[in-house]
Amino acid sequence: MRGDRDSNPRPSGHRHDTMSSGEQKSEMLRGYGHLFSLSLAHFKSAAIKCAVELGIPTAIKRCGGAATVSDLIKEIGLVPAKAPYLSRLLRFLAFFGLFEEDDEESASAESQTVYKLTPTSRLLVQEADNDSTCDLSHMLLLFTRPSTTVSTFFDLERWFRDPISTKTVFEAAHGTSTWSLTQSDASFNDAMNRASVADSRFTMEVVIKEAGGYFKGLKTLTDVGGGHGAATAAIVAAFPDMQCTVMDLQQVISSAPECGGTVKFVVGDMFESIPPADAVLLKLVLHSWDDASCIKILKRCKEAIPPTGGKVFIINTVLGHRGETSKQVTEAQLLFDLYMMRGHGFERDERQWKTIFLEAGFANYTVIPLQDPLAMIVLHPSPLVVETTVKVTGAGGAKEDSFLSTDEAEAAP
Image 1 (cartoon, rainbow, N blue to C red):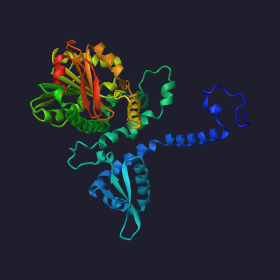
Image 2 (spheres, helix red, strand yellow; image 1 turned 45 degrees about the vertical axis):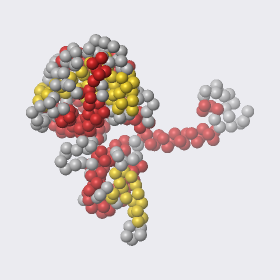
Image 3 (cartoon, rainbow, N blue to C red; image 1 turned 90 degrees about the vertical axis):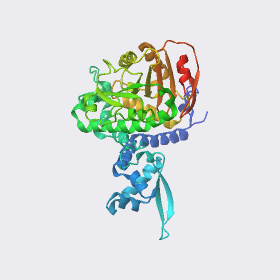
Image 4 (cartoon, rainbow, N blue to C red; image 1 turned 135 degrees about the horizontal axis):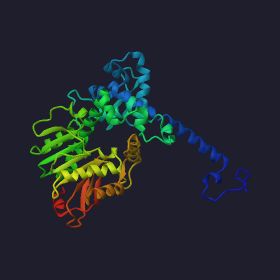
């Protein structure tokens, strides 16, 4: 036996014990680098937040889609002394795919790095009219908000070790629930509403394109937790004859803008009752709640829609629905799940969704993939008429599943 091996090796499954000391040291050095990367990962959020607040993506677009550090210093209005630091920020963000780097020769024959937009940073260009369906900057600013997002998870260890408290992570950090804080903190309420509008404009454009057929024939719709009505506005734009109601909390509805004659806003409690309609929309609502709360909400939805032809649309993550996914998509889903740990909610896989659907009285559903990491689930309360497998093609390709009633199968796009 070689002297650099453990003289009493364990079974072959213990890979570390069968490695040479050189191999072990090499692995530990890789782990050391990985540990640094993980420990400083919060700088990614801080850097991208800074880029959005400085308006770098917008400035690059104003420069014709490509800009040097000198261009950006002038366009943003920074003092020249900050150029080296801005260069380091851009280099860092380019490494993670927020910008594209190109080296170009200047008039003085010196090479300059030119920064261009990527598909990711194009989603952070802030338009002057504030109506762009592709501007997700407000959503990013909510997720990177120091006082209510980042700080919430600063003391998780204390929360885990508390054997008595029934407070959520958010309540332990801030002394109140998320929804109560939107009542007392106007800036947080505004940040939540702006993020919701930004995400709804982007997501609903995909929903209408990929799954618009499911909305055909509906005369009325209630958007539960619909915020300022951005999702409803997109639906009405595609289906002008549909009458829609947006229901949310008082602090949300009180600042909602006018959406036109076919949309009305009402203050309500989804645990008590939901305004009757042909369909109910729950966009990014149920992942905020535990199973018992979700079942109660879905039962109120079932009471609000017709027993035949009624529908409930759920837009949320469905973990593992696509089968094999990229590391980036899986990471986004897991991060979103950790984010929802601030309250009682969590992201669910299809089996977990099905459990609460059946408990709430919905035997039939189908899942339509949207943009990662989201999907749309369509529920309807009709008794099972015929077992029909429908191939639904979404942004991520075809997915065969679900039991649909005869009427639903005919209506599927």
